[in-house]
Structure formats: C-alpha cells, structure tokens
Length: 169
Image (cartoon, rainbow, N blue to C red; front, side):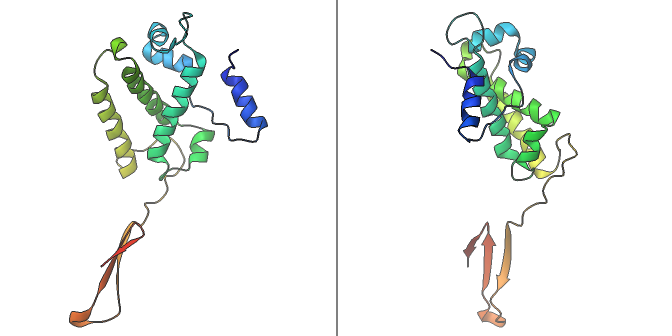
C-alpha cells in the first residue's frame, strides 16, 4: 500500500518533525514542461500520470538547491513563508535541469548549458548584480576577512590575516 505525499506530510507534522512545503507543484511544472513531458519524465509506476510523490520530492530538492545558494543573503524563513516569483522560477529552472539529467532520452537540448545559466543567475543575486523580486532585504555582506597587527612596529611586526575564521600568518 502506497502512502501519499499528503499523508507523509501529516505524519511528519504529527511527529513534531519539520515539514517542508515546496514553492511549486505539478501544475507549475506542467506549465513549464507540458503535461505529456511530465508523464514521460515522472510516471515511475507506468499508470499514465506523473507521480505526485516524485514531483513533490523534486520540488523540495529544487527549492533546497536555490535556498542553499541564497540562504546566506536572504532569511530562509521569510523566503519559505512567501516565496518571491524569481525564487519559484529559479526552482522550476532547476527542476528542468534535473529532469533532463533524470531522463536525457526525453530532453530537448543539453542540461549543462541550462545549469551554467542557472548558476550564473544565482551568482548575480549573491554578488548584488541582481536581486529577488521581494521587499525582503538581503542580509548585509558578511565580513569574511581582515588583518590584525600584533602591536609591534618596525621589522618585527607580524600581521595575522583572518579568512572565514581561519587565522594565518
């Protein structure tokens, strides 16, 4: 007997475990890929429909991939509570990439070019060239380095360089 994604979510909530809800679902993925493509890519039990549990897992993984790249500059709780359109689009972009990796025989084009474009867009957001379409403010850039002198002057002065909490001389 199979357990639906909804039943698993309810079980996790009842156990007091964190419940992760995806920012998009099958309808949005079908709008991106087509309903026929979703059946070809996600019908693991060959019943003629895309398996909801497979799509839900894909959505959670894709959201997580975007969060892992933006979590240091945006508050994840705020992003999850009200995901901006750009966040959902980036997550769906990654779903297309993973779909092409999962079943390259159904893919139209290379996933590698798409993945490079996806990474470049996320990099632009991380570096401040672009931003999400949200009123949420990105976190200020972290101080990831600095130099501290040991207090002596002249030729014996020693500088300690701190990079991400690691000290080097």
